[in-house]
Length: 261
Length: 253
Image (cartoon, rainbow over all chains, first blue to last red; front, side, top):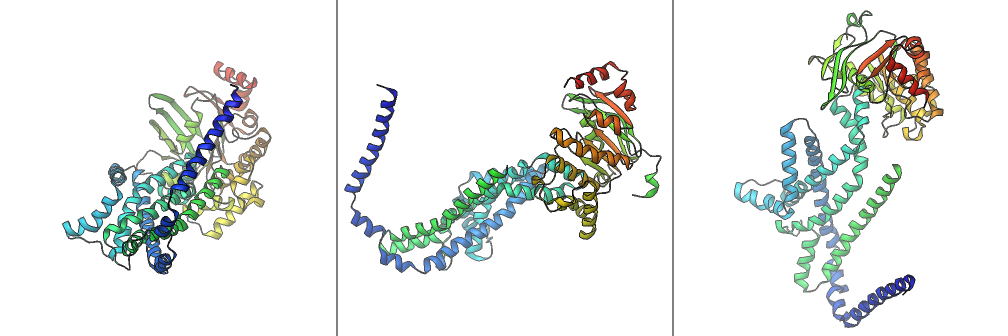
């Protein structure tokens, strides 16, 4: 058999089997039941406006809180990790390894339950703050590594030029190195933000109230009342409405940095 | 800095028995070297000879393994010495320019003045414009470095150093990263600095510049100063066989 013919035959086979699978699936599925279970318009309408005004709003608040707190902590950890002072480096290393190695859920339970119950220490500010802090602690470990990588991506000559002007290490870091590092790490940091948005769904464990409920818990509660899958469809769409634009922004930013090099 | 220490008798740069090793590799093997006020000294030599390392040891970008570096009589290795403060008096120009890409030309020239010398914004800007005019790039004041040619970037880098009003300037192969047609404009700026009496230590491969502008030329090979003297001697009529070999190799390139 000629090479050309064989290539064409394999391509045909690949297309053919795909179409076959789709047709079999489409014929065998009970579309009416599926539509009723996941696309009930009335149930969907019932969820509004709370799904946006409370649940989506809280998801965004948790994310924003966790990201802000996590970012500040991450910056501190990254600087500690690059410090010439040994104990700072060890602390940062341990922190980063610990929180990257543990499931986020464990950290959340630790902050929300273990601390108040075992030590009698509760982080003040209610569920919103507690949830943000727990997620921020985890996110900081990842973001610290991102920031450090960004700082190390700035050419050595930049530090040397800054120091030769008489700048101290910290002045050079703040005015010369970090501004350039942040340009490099905006895409990976935005990715971190998207991951964080999705991780807020873990906060169901901290026992949110109707006022502090985030998207996933809100959808699940709605599901257990209606015995229907539609709430899941709705919150999935809301999640995508938040995350898809962000991932698009990341793609754009990455294209721009690639061009600038 | 009190004025009595800025005595004309104290050489701006004095290096005594300088050794520098990277791991087990000894790059500088006992250098004694001096640059006097207003003097232009070119340091030449094969690549890997240690000439850039010597230059970088002068402002302590590299810390010497042993030996002494005195800047205007101040011992750079003395724990009491504020190395950052001394560096403000030593301008440094790099092979790769090392302009700050996130800042405009103006901000490149003012950031050191404002953050280190604590000059006011308007004073720093006046100085920046004056030195930019001096290197012929006043019209690029609002550009970002990436939009400039290599020669223009290097002239901005020289202006950035000058904006700190340094007492002396170090040049680390300032034209080696430039296209041949852009070398002249940078050398012109350096010539005019030399003519104005700036104390300069220049690591370079530009023999033409060394002959014209240098008061003294030092050839470094394998970590030691092989030959030192006026350019007519070192470049035109070298005494040492290694100097002769180096200059001959240059001619063949």
